[in-house]
Amino acid sequence: MQPTTPPPDVYHSEVALRVNGEPRRLTVDHRTTLLDALREALGLTGAKKGCDHGQCGACTVLVDGRRANACLLLAVTLDGSDVTTVEGIAKDGGERLHPLQRAFLDRDAFQCGYCTPGQLCSALGMLGEAAAGHPSLATDPDTPPAQGPAALTPDEIRERMSGNLCRCGAYPNIVRAVEDVIR
Image (cartoon, rainbow, N blue to C red; front, side, top):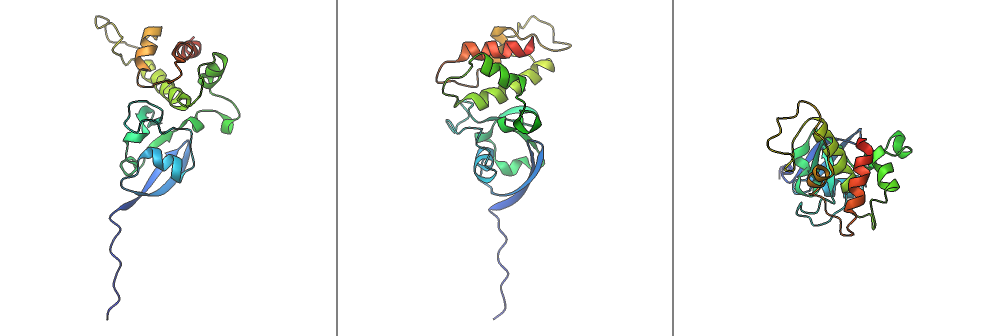
């Protein structure tokens, strides 16, 4: 009897990611979401599992600088991507809070805190989108396209953050915290 070669593993692949600035290699089941890879394989539990349908925003992370619901992305599709979680937004290895984190604390922009990591990542992504001049649904359609940063009024902030739900209703303080950072 000849030795048999094991069949190729068609259900798993190796993925290279840069997570919070560090290169990481993972072997993932093709069905593994980015959220599960972050939480279960890398032990980064900041992004929360909320609705698992991309409707609550608790799992929001930044993928290549853009906001994304980690529960909707398959990790295998992100080979070579740069992922930032809430654990990666503070400076000096977590010793120095990001201005958004400081503003959330100063404005008491959380109650139970479950949605806070997603809110922070979403706010950070939103600031980048506004800085690039991207309009939102709250932007006056008669306004000429922004040649620079888009103005972030409270209505703009609420619209741009509308994909992140807070069961405790801390929305007014979240808006104030974001306003503190843009001033």
